[in-house]
Length: 322
Image (cartoon, rainbow, N blue to C red):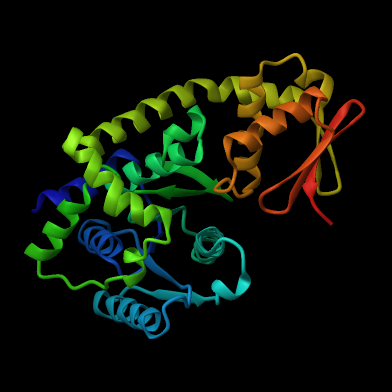
């Protein structure tokens, strides 16, 4: 058995994955390798989910056809959805991710699946940390991508390849003579993540050839620290939260003023995560503005995802803009 397959089986055992699972397959090397690995070592049922963003014309359609063929060859059900992401405006990456993951949850619910697997690798982890640092992340952002985290409706997001370098993925595919699709948009320098992958990471490797592993350790340590704070923040949120007014969340502003800025930022991050609100566009400035609103120095502000937060008297209200 190859080292690659063994690593996936160890992940499945370590995280006690059971029951039907959804495998997000784009057709690229990482997700194709993930599907092959799970197919070789998981017997409780898999469903392939492919989202066509319709961003690359015929190339996107070729990816879809390729994934459908994978499912047929493995005798694994394939579900496909599509949307013209570019026509929706806004940040293409953020919009695509939101639509994709919302649909993944729908697919998981349809099949009574308890987890959704994506093909994120150790290189993706490194790129994510660098991307967040460039944007001005706080300590929380250094946690990067979690290997296994609760997502929505009792469904977990799992990343079985997070400890595997992209070079090892390509080596496995090459050794096994496994075909995969190539996304031409990965070469587009207009996307910050592509520049990180093509320019910044290679430069950093001249200082530290093991920079991907170093950033992975940093993420793991940040996650451990974050876990130590989870119970405290959950308790704080329980004391601060008041009954909703329709869809609007309500917090006790006086209770918030008794807390440190760090606690308030973490409380709001927990709310964003719990409610499934977009965090991709949230910068250190946004989280700081929430602290200011809680303190009463700023009356109100708008946030990514159509959210608005305001302090009115003794409460802070959070909801979507009309």
